[in-house]
Amino acid sequence: MPALDFSKWSPGGNTTLFFPAAGLDAARQAELARQAMRPDSLGAEQAGFVSVEERRLRMAGGEFCVNATRAFGALLAFRESASPEATLQGIARQKLTNEHRYEVQVSGWQSPIRLQVRGTSPHWQVRAELQLLPCPITHPEQGIHLVRLPGICHLLLDGEVHMQPEDCIAASRMLRRQYGMTGEVASGVIWWGRRAGLLDMLPVVHVRDAHTTCIENACGSGALALALLLAAKGNRKPLDIMQPGGSSLHVHIPDDDQGKAFIDGPVDLVARGRVWLPDAQA
Image 1 (cartoon, rainbow, N blue to C red):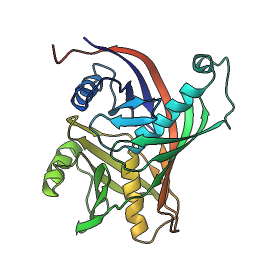
Image 2 (cartoon, rainbow, N blue to C red):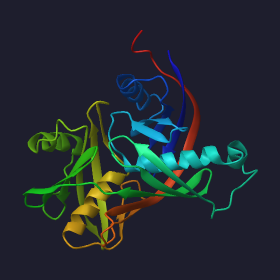
Image 3 (cartoon, rainbow, N blue to C red):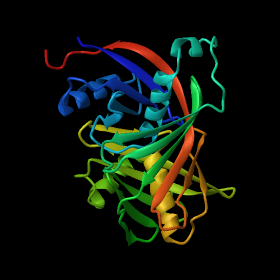
């Protein structure tokens, strides 16, 4: 029964587990993540494996995840603070204006990602700056767009045309098959719309090698995909996109020739400790 150190984070509600990456191959990472994410274990929507020294994050299925990337920035800031435990206990509070900047490598995304971390344990605001790579957008039928990001793709369904179904998990499974997404490392099906003038979305994300499908409380790559779609239609204004968990993600794709995207939002540290998991190899 392996024992693993862990930390649990909530980037806007998208609960994320981090484990040390050392000594674990991709298959073992996927298996351990699947066990730890179960409701009768640590419970989470996703998991990743980190090397703090190398500033490298690999998601359990090798996919790309914006929110986990932002949470990794908070982890680095937490580890860098002079006395993390004292800070958590309120003994040595950092200033809210305290800022850290990092450059990290993340699975699925080919270029380094810059992170700006503001705040103090256990609450931060983290902005990810991405150098955009080609992200093809196709329009297979009315109200449906497929946005392919490196490391994940998203099928976006406009709520004005496609009502949110009662069983989103089953519907997303059918839609992934229908639109040829089953072979993707990770894929999301997102119902989006506008309520009282605000953008909102409901993401269902499937990670192939981790064998997980989850209605997420927040999805950073899905918010980015939606912003890319709207930008392609001429709307490059900064967007606040409400997430199912109640927070919003701020997404900005500037109208210049820099080819960058910025995703900003809250990250909270939920728990740290050690977990004992069943040994699937025993």
